[in-house]
Image (cartoon, rainbow, N blue to C red; front, side, top):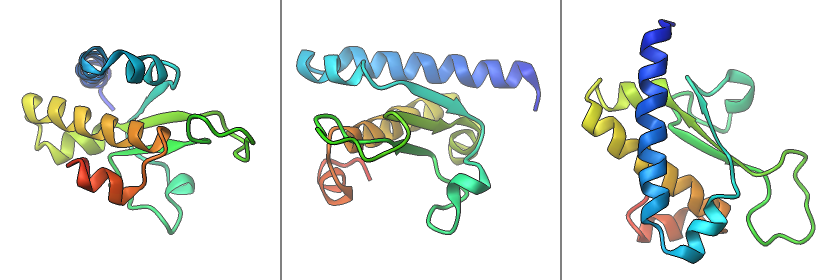
Length: 125
């Protein structure tokens, strides 16, 4: 992978996630700021397994916010798969930033305890 290309994607994604975070209501912003966002090029085969699409754009792992009995061995994290997002956006920076925003909000919704139906109702499918 070309280092300049990767830095560009990370810079665009960081800007989009930070702008999205700043626009959240204060209560949500404080909770959202506690979950790290990790940028990876693609989802790995071992993470995707048979359950996830290898073209996944993002993934939340860990226990949702407010879970009192931790059952997950990994702390809460949001993964954004930047090469998958770039491919999905067909290398258009504006579309890429918008897809990063939507994917971040989708995975943040999982962190906040929303399921796929809840996210779909909010236009974050």
